[in-house]
Image (tube, rainbow, N blue to C red; front, side):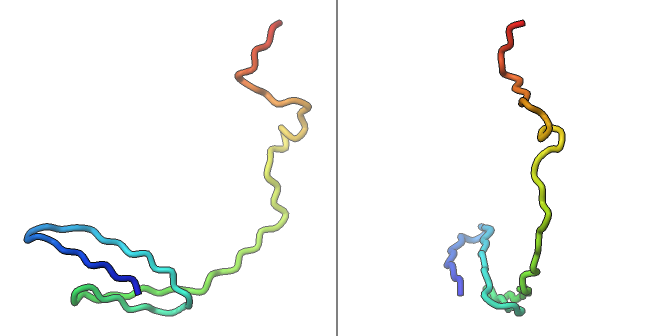
Length: 74
């Protein structure tokens, strides 16, 4: 359980955030000073990436790369 103690002066407000990394898929109940809520952690969805080609077909066919900072004397 994550816990933080915050003290505020009368009329003062402050945002507080918590990071939760659930270890199981279920609905978690949250309570803060009498206020309640919940969040649902779900099972990760499996993703498969195949036949991925990173590059540019045009640049792959060139024998040289264009360098805009290269000084060329003609």
